[in-house]
Image 1 (tube, rainbow, N blue to C red):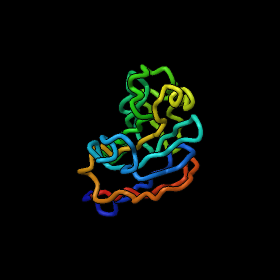
Image 2: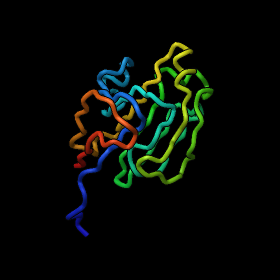
Image 3: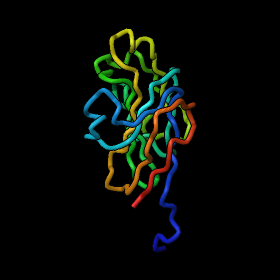
Length: 159
């Protein structure tokens, strides 16, 4: 009734196989300077991108390069696939979810053609951003290293 005992932490998992890195290492200043929020990035070694948390798909961008998920605590998470990929008008992406759909950790969100993105001269970096940081008092510190999708990258700490 008063929120006592409510879980104040939520684990976040890797969205793809590859090399995880701090968001500050992303070559796009909008992400690396945390203008949209904090988070982490993965240099993918496969074409599948999964959900980092359980929640509801709030947005699938028309260009299919980004998907928004809202958790049951109201945290909005953006899964952004590739850098400057909005200009590709959705060509290298196959969305596997739609707005309003419930997802769990490891639900397949999208298939992206990493080779096509790189051939276009862009980076295939997948960035996970917690956009409404006002709900959080702590985000996981991410150290560079290899991960498989579903590996826990840390826990979010809610206020």
